[in-house]
Image 1: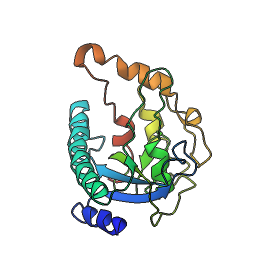
Image 2 (image 1 turned 90 degrees about the vertical axis):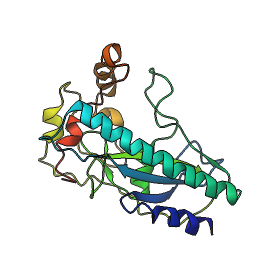
Image 3 (image 1 turned 60 degrees about the vertical axis):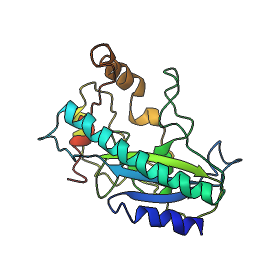
Image 4 (image 1 turned 30 degrees about the vertical axis):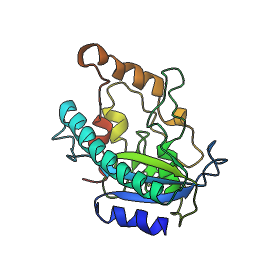
Length: 217
């Protein structure tokens, strides 16, 4: 019944992509059986022709509001059914390892929402990489999505790699066993984006590698 109720929530948000996955691979596996992962499209789906950093940041924040609204509804349902759950943090808690306790991206590919592109971002068929991910760990079994094992990016497409201002992308084609460090110099990316903190009080949204992606345009 709880799964049916959860799915009914997403009927109110037809633009949102979602799915369930088991988390046997995760450090959370001892406490929770599954993860619900969902991808909310950015407020404005920018292309490279319409991109500005400010517009991209606004799109992210617009999607965040929808994520929070859906999250509140999901929590209400899970509390109603007295199901144990946890909402893992969206990002790393420190700047040392730059690794979140639970990877939304890895959960997304395991749930069948998309694959990891050469820009180290989840690529969906419908929106490309222009989505904000969220996840809830739930101690319940569900009907799981089909795990995606390989990238669907064309081998010869290097648009995201070539447009990266920091030259942080290695142009490597992802598969389920790939390491993040093979695809992106994530420390360099974070270091360059963090320069923005001095003037804007936040990191540079820097979505060029997402805006240029041909998927979802």
